[in-house]
Image (cartoon, rainbow, N blue to C red; front, side, top):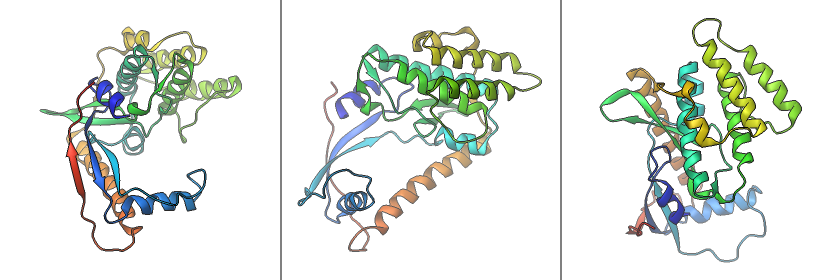
Length: 266
């Protein structure tokens, strides 16, 4: 995972992995999380009889504006914003596909945003979990997920991966019915055509990235909204840390012991 992530993370629309380190689990943080996963049934198989003392940890780039899901929950996403997200996500996917990798985990929680320095209202889109991309020449699963993601941005409700033809037809109708009445309806219609092409396998990611209708658009949020998104991203990270600490045994504050090294880039 580190070898792949450190290689594909050089792309501007893929989240970078900064460092790999050995973490000595002296406070049993990781053991507690693993035991909880086994107890809750999230991990298959029997509970290991022995856990290691140290674990390999990958330090990832912090994307300070959170996920697409957070953006959808807090902002009105315009057709222009959708076009910018589609162009940048397709760029990251095209890069993976050109290296015989498929993402296979595309969704509103794996599309993240980062505020650009000195451009306070402009966000860049980055794909997470690229280090877990599978070596494969199969592309349609990513295309199907991407079509479902574009559809999700235009309709109310949770993200769903539409795979059956009947489901796709209903979802596409809902997307078209949600078109804005004024400015932006032509771009919306183009996005609905793109959803259909993706589901039918009639276009690849490199072609999507270069579509003329997607050019010239950016993801922009007001400065106050950007600060709010950044705080939400930090709060989410803090909640995960506190939840992990609350599950620990014993309950004292942990001391993170890292034997750090920077791996050679492949």
